[in-house]
Image (cartoon, rainbow, N blue to C red; front, side):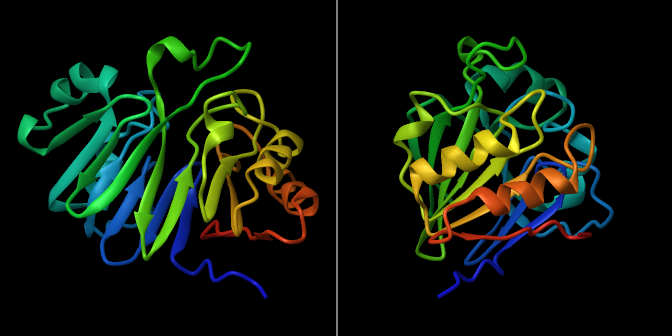
Length: 215
């Protein structure tokens, strides 16, 4: 039986939207629409294709909370976000934000210099709709995220700065969630072919689906 992934939408690259009791957006970037209805915006790290203030403005409701890595506080304040609407998290931390349980997970490369562990950048496990959605951020499989337990794994497949499609499939097969969605392709790095290859390599017991809005 296939798993229903209709709650998950990717707007391109790594911009993830999850609909449920709340609307949660992760790393909004290059949005073509301006729904302005997300209660919670999560940012995995401060690279421009993940922390884009103009796209956050398009996604966020007027009173939205911004969840960021602790190391990003100066960048968020410099961009004009008030302290009252910031939630800063460190790897391993578990918080409830507007009734949504969020767990911060280390996101880093093992040997490449783009995303180092020392920066404290994040992936997030988001409890919504009675499910745990893991949005991995820009990362390789590592000793920290290999421990994640989730129902839906949303993982990068584009290579260069993150896992390749092959590596991402291996990672998902290790986690063995109910469902998986490829991300981080189609803009800057990665192609639709990477997403399709990921689907081919994921264990058939896991519902794997492309949720990119324009695909």
